[in-house]
Amino acid sequence: MSTQDQINAAIAAHSMWKARLKAAMQTGSSEFSPSAVAHDDRCDFGKWLHGAAATAFKGSPHHTKCVELHRQFHTVAARVLSLALAGKRDEATRSMSPQGEYAVASGALTKAMMDWKSAG
Image 1 (cartoon, one colour):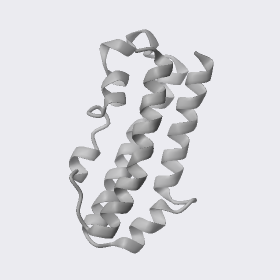
Image 2: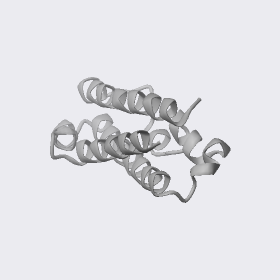
Image 3: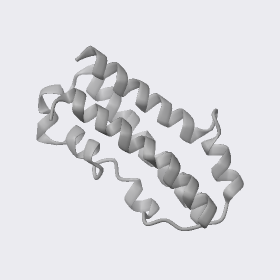
């Protein structure tokens, strides 16, 4: 799969987290655990970023930025999921708001992936 294809797939997959987190906020449950979500090397994009397929890009500014922002995204998503599962809907909702922690982390990651895609 090309870098552009990997990035397109990652953008689509990570955008699905917004719906998953909102569903967890509404139901108080999720098929995912916060500890699993926190790992940035288990989703397909994370496996690619940290794996041999991305070796040629390691150390490049785009790769370095995406690795860090991807890690942050997973940390924040896990935190929001923890809040949702603990019934702290108001706190989770604040994080998901346009200026909230989740929205900022998600937007930064998406922008960095789009920048990498257009550079490549």
